[in-house]
Length: 191
Ligand code: S3P
Image (tube, rainbow, N blue to C red; front, top):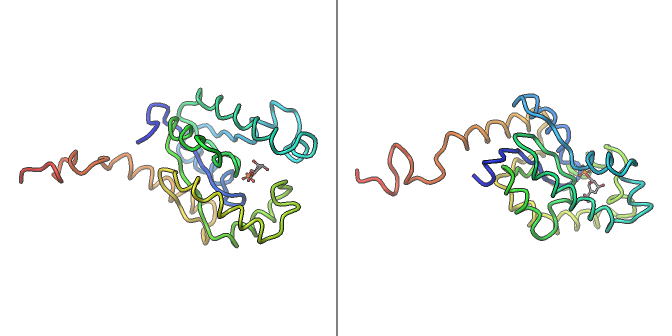
């Protein structure tokens, strides 16, 4: 498993995937600390994300995300929720995998979009039509798809998603990464 030394669990996915709610529940289930990159950014900037976008623009916000990713390298054993656009730059997903197991909270665009619109002020959605938001999701998918595994959140509530992520993590801990290493045999078995 990539990043097993730092042992963080990192949630990625589009706006409305439920990264924050699922992350909070998952951290409680696993007895770990919960960290959000958006919170790290608003704490250091001293103002909310819509204000950062309005006053300094998206490019500045992405630079703050770069800094947040660098600071994540210090984290050990945490559950980390990332902003929807954070992994969607060259090298970012790889940097996240270096510090833990990356989980993509995926889903049908319609379900994610409805949730995202209900969930407050999101500068990446204001000023975009539904079609433009869907195009953004499609453009981001190849980045999210580099995660260690995905959980489809479309028809699930945050408790159910957290349970699936926890089960998948437990399964990965008990399953040898390669059949040849399995105690019951596999490619390397002579029986
Ligand atoms: C963004 C998603 C937001 C936040 C910022 C930019 C994006 O986080 O980081 O508004 O580019 O998709 P959520 O995914 O939690 O909404």
